[in-house]
Length: 490
Ligand code: AMP
Ligand code: MG
Image (tube, rainbow, N blue to C red):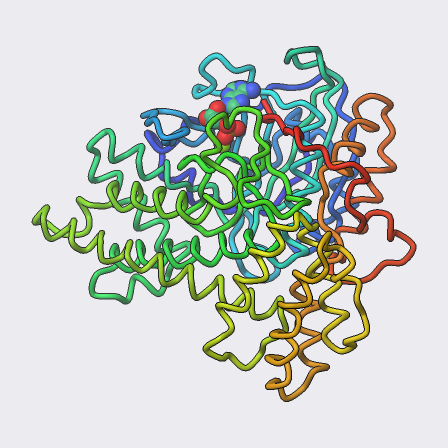
């Protein structure tokens, strides 16, 4: 007997070659280690029902909920610059779609639920550490107000997964606007399947860009829409020091959400060259490269869409280039708008851009903590005596020179209280710092102690609030670990 869930599956109806039907592989001893009750309610689901043994069986892939049509989706992708014509969900299974209380359709997907026709040599499983990392970081992103997939639940399987060592297995239940990627379009383009490409584009327009269907050139509007959302998204990442880690085209959602949290991390010390991923030898996906890589990935999307943009190939290329040119201005605008918020500059002025980038340059030169500097600046906005930010600089004069210009600029703001409020809402006190995430994962994996994970998730749900009882979680690591690396969640 399994619990029914109110599925309404549109992607499954597309059939092959979009997907392959596949059932999750049962696990030996499912145990619910985290349920996102708030998210469950927002989706119109009953958290208590999900927490019953029948509910947990669904979250572990041991039972199929009524209405579910499990499928693995096909996609291709550029991985570190090299094209792979077929990737697909190798360890994820889409259970179906649910309309939330907000009326928005969302995918419910199990990640780590066993092999699929796209698994290649992989085991289709996930280890507990990476599952908890994705839970922590994706929920932190959501609380920061950044578009992202969500985590509905994490279960341990009772089985071991073979990695460099044997590790406890786990399954994440992931919620997304959809799991359609740039690489999904590349899959059809590589097969020269223009009919499939058009069906995919029509599905994405209906689901994510309904305004494009009213355009005389809907596919051009679709491309422009994806470009605009990605530009805004990556700007948001940059403003909180987030480094995705593996911005392959198969890890870029066309809905504009942050997706596929693998070796992701937030930078502590301001250093634009920061790269965490142990597999990113060349620093391709370093912090500072993210806007350029997003642009590059979107060029791959534009290439894939060429057959839909115009019958004449030269005309199609012109349309694509025109849309891609829009990325640069969209990104720059989003970047500057976000930096203005971070500095409390609510009435835009010409000099804001130079002022903001001057601060970032000084922060990098002085190797200050990115998050803490901006948070302390928020206090300094209303109180010039508050010198917490200044104290972070090894050479405080470097801060003073900039701060004088900032104070002069703030004098043009009508309401310094409003500036400070905006800053406190743009500059988080709490981010998932690497050392905290690692400690929470280690406690869970090595000692079955989920308390640090729970505390972190709870605190990160209110990143813009000072939470004095948890002040230690706002602090940078005592010793900066320059060699910090995260590892792909395989
Ligand atoms: P990722 O680097 O996690 O974005 O994954 C890249 C590709 O490898 C995707 O097609 C995944 O489905 C696949 N993959 C990653 N890990 C596994 C695994 N353990 N078993 C099967 N496929 C996997
Ligand atoms: Mg991926």
